[in-house]
Length: 364
View 1 (cartoon, rainbow, N blue to C red):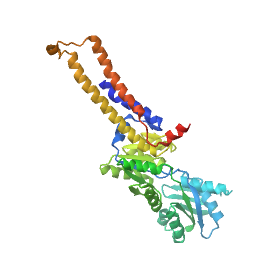
View 2: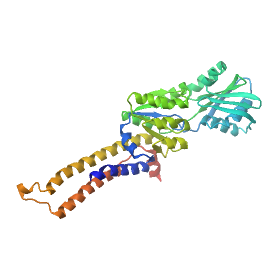
View 3: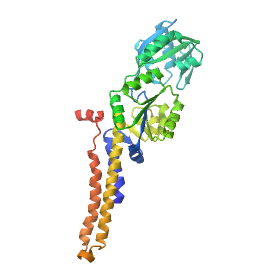
View 4: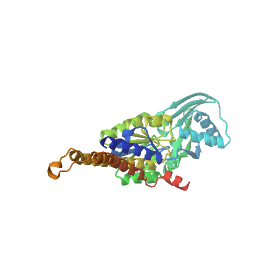
């Protein structure tokens, strides 16, 4: 019974997690997740839908079509979600691209490309400022974008700012619920993103996130995770992109979105198959229920055997003349295992609260 106590609970727990869309690769994580104190979320594709779309364009000297054509030509070689949004928008307008002479991706900042004989820099305000490109002409557009919770992507041609594109990525329907459930459980929430600080702050405050860390370069994410761990916190990281992989590996528990990159999924110990952030809260609750079940099993088996073995050894014989018949001894031995198995199977009754995955399947 003692030997069965832990593995049975773990096995049932892993199976139960799979039922509501959480794939657990490492059995140890089912125990350690119960101790999580801080959950760090990436923004794009984790709390948002990961399908950014163009909401507006500002152009300076070039006309809007020419600006979009140049940006589309350069961005089609980038794998960034914001680049994809620009390309999709340009295609919807029937715009064709120029030939690209050279292309260089500046990780977490933007891109540099030579398009139709012109030097293009496309990226964040910080990136263009670092190149000494003045962006004052787009100040109003940038401010309006931030106020609307949109990300501004700036476009410079031959060292001069020529325009900007406003892109937004809608929140997932259950992001509010995911954050509120974690906060209700006393878990600290952190938003860790490379996005514009104003955009991240507005989104973070709307969701009620405790701490917002924005404009983080990809290779700095793991450093921020380490800083949180150095504060004595047990940290879970939730992400979906290639950029999140080092942070997922560094965190005490890495949780990847099933819709994310292969590298992120490989780096994490848990994968959310339905990509719902609510599943993070459900996984932690299941972990707590599994650990509680294991303790019940161990306690029950220990007490049962502590009483049963002395009785079988004849400790009551001098007082009551009672000896345990081998038939009853065998039955009692089996009963201890049955008790543990029955208690472990109680975990099958665990139901994640408000899981969209369950609601979708109940309709089916």
